Image 1 (tube, rainbow, N blue to C red):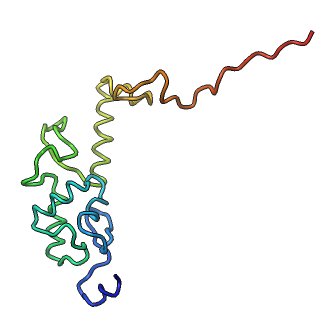
Image 2 (image 1 turned 180 degrees about the vertical axis):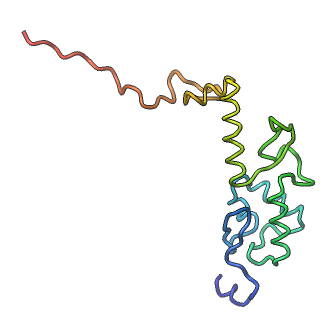
Image 3 (image 1 turned 135 degrees about the vertical axis):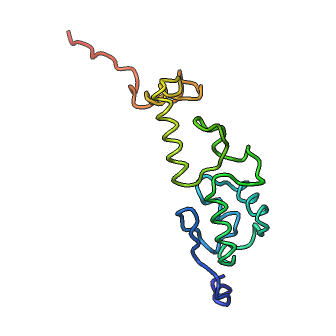
Length: 158
């Protein structure tokens, strides 16, 4: 595979998008799925939206196509992609839908959790206490750091 790339002078072995280095030898859909906040389905949809072949290696794209892809991904709202594919819907402060990538996603999740803690909502309190948040079982599952078992008293010698 490396021999084929030597023939193409414009091949890029490393493509940088959203502060992450992507392997240029991987297909476009798999390389985009390496970004935090973009899955396989969304990466294929983005490729089709920008008229790119999802199976083409990302290093074979021209510089202008990579720049167009970079601007599209780093923009929070993707035109022509349904809102249910976004990873941050109905923002608490603005009420808008958008898709966040890499560090922006981590920061937004932490901000949302801190806001829930500050509001003293049920989910915020559960986050503070380190308990399960989404209604999972607690009686028999998810026990961490508690007693190992029943400890019996030592029998006294008579």
